[in-house]
Image (cartoon, rainbow, N blue to C red; front, side):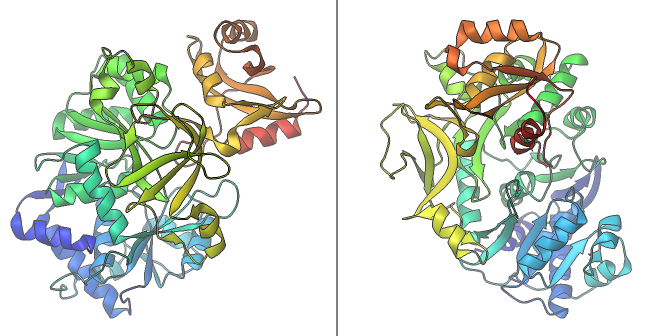
Amino acid sequence: MNPAEWLHRTAQREASRQALFTGETLQADYAGFRDAAARLGAGLAAKGIVKGDRVAVFMSNRVEYLIALYGIWFTGAAAVPINAKLHTKEADWIIENAEAKLTLSDGKLAAELARPAISVDDATWQSLLESSPIARPAIMDSGDMAWLFYTSGTTGKPKGVLISCGNIASMTMSYFVDVDDVFAEDAILYAAPMSHGAGIYNFMHVIRGARHVVPVSGGFDPAEILTLGRSIGSISMFAAPTMVRRLVDHAKATGQTGEGLRTITYAGGPMYETDILDAVEVMGPRFVQVYGQGECPMGITALPRSDVADRAHPNWRSRLNSVGKAQSAVLVRILDADGAECPPGETGEIAVRGDTVMSGYWRNPDATAKTVVDGWLWTGDMGSIDADGYVTMQDRSKDMIISGGSNIYPREVEEVLLSHPDVSEVAVVGRPHPDWGEEVVAFVVGSAPSKALDQLCLDQIARFKRPKDYIAVPDLPKNNYGKVLKTDLRARLKEAPET
């Protein structure tokens, strides 16, 4: 199913329903949204774009982003969304690797690219929109590539993940069953990059004829989001855990409760217990957790709002610290190094298979073969499943610390340290040790003294797990999606003497 078919059907059914907003300003109804995409598709086709081609989108958050995506799909081509926060050299590499025939961009980004790009701010874009619209989206089958997503590449060059029409349909339908329902009066707010999780959540809102809102700032601003919640109403949004923390802090500081924000789906990194407890206390049962990867977009597990807000079930705390249960379209297992399934409660690598799992890596069969084995996607994440099916994620396998032959999962230590009131952020990594292999080191943002943190760990976790060093830092290095770059922290340890 071509995703553009969903837009076409909604426009047929609800032509006058409000569709695209910049802040509180209406830019197009569904008839206008569909017409712009169909005209853009015709313009792209006139430039030689055909089914199976790749068209890159290197653009900041704006309503034209959605028009670009659907215009590409009207032709049957695949979109290659590139995070606008990347350096243009990184974007150029992705464009070349994807063998994109065209690039759609905006303003300064387009000017800085090495390859020619069509900017939504110039006359060429407008001329494309003056083309006679395509009558109907091209037919695309389940296995046809629709979205070529490039991983963040923190350990090397990013890999292109082939997301098919079938993968998107599976993720979208699972959202309705496992994450949240969507109603016509709802709105989705794009405060995180539309090239990633925020943008990929457009589909279910297009299907239901909901509104699509891009903040005037084009990004994440807590004050702006809370204001839009009150004025637009019934808003859903995707946010990384660090964004949730900032939003809740602002709401608390200004005496707000998140009025008008219906659902906040968080993913992309660990949400620490202290943070989500605070979030629910301040803003109520608005939060849903999703666990996914680029290789299985937003589609591995889900923890519904009822579980996130529950404080009555005997196991509520362990469930709150989990990433939920397997979504309906996939199987999730915990596997040991030999590929055998681990019993409940035992830690191994999280593996997933099903219709949401990627088709493979773009032009990289070796990486595909290493990652997808006998139909199972090995996620690289360590975790366990309890008897009720709740998956608790420990850490990335590469982040696990092995000290004296014992496995130490950084998140367990981080949870303890974050319970100190004077710690705002923390990241735990391993430092090479001549006798033990590795030793635990904590990078801490906050004013808590090391002696207090050490005693906190001694009181709550095994002695061998406690950090041997506490390094105070003003902030933690993060990538463009808000994930802490532990590779940078490990590199910093190699460069500096022990404190």
